[in-house]
Length: 417
Image 1 (cartoon, rainbow, N blue to C red):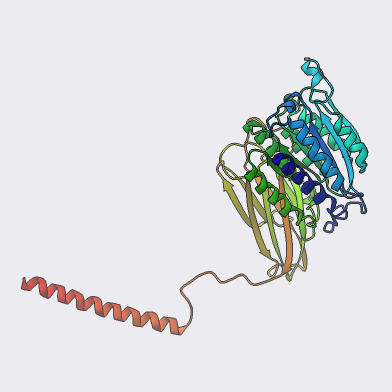
Image 2: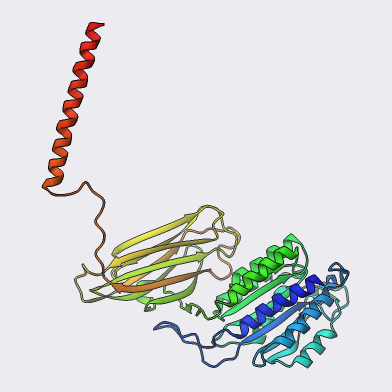
């Protein structure tokens, strides 16, 4: 019963928080703006594979707890919510894995929430087959379609994918790389380490969240985190941009926050117009959403259109760093032209024998700001002026006099002895 209440609250936080997401997310200049007035969309993806029959949650089966929690959440959803339901492992009862791994269906199309139809569809589910999580995620993304506002998938499962390929983590990265504003939140119903790792990977790849039912205390903490996240629902997502292969092909960006992806050992170029009385400030944060070899780094450079480097900075990790961040600052006060385009270059030194040339690139965020030029601070030094020279002279004389007196005293004492 405790788990049912916790699961219900977790889902309520996810779905209600999603329902208040802004539907208009204007990006900076030169970035594509999403279409306005699109209602929020969410699809529940529920695991109905055979393992959901287990009676290990307060003497009740996992599927019955999930059904009860879902019914209560549906009753609390705002009327304008666009809700869909997809299941996996719900119909095929045979032993043929190839056939069972195709078992995913959308039982409620994405549309304005119909509470009676949604609860009736969930009530008929009985745990049956395999666990094609990757295939279900890909299908759920298609169910939600495209558009400007963020779409959310809530995945509830008690086990890891038993049908890969496609691997669920690769599918999540693939969906994130498509620029669909798609977020996948995951909830694990079994205290299994492999399940936890897979669900964490799926959530991390799309900017979603993960919670598990291992202990009531842990779930309470997870729910609090989710509640805190809903308070930030009005934060605009970064604008999606595609960097060029060289400066001449780079997109022209204005101040703002952008997101892009970079493959291993790739270089991504962007241009920023700077006036003579302005200063460029830029930073990049790149996330590791897959295993890579130890010892890696990210480099951010500002160069002129003809390739002359103005400033550079880098950050490095050695195997336990999830995010690398670095930034540059350059003032156009000394420029010889009134307006110039500065090119920003993002490079990386990642390496992975298994995935060097596969899948989408690493996700990163690029933050650009242009402010009034300010003089660079003076470098630390010894000081300036006649007063400093006088102080140094007096200090030298005193030091010499004391050293001479101590030497004479030591010599006189040594001769006496």
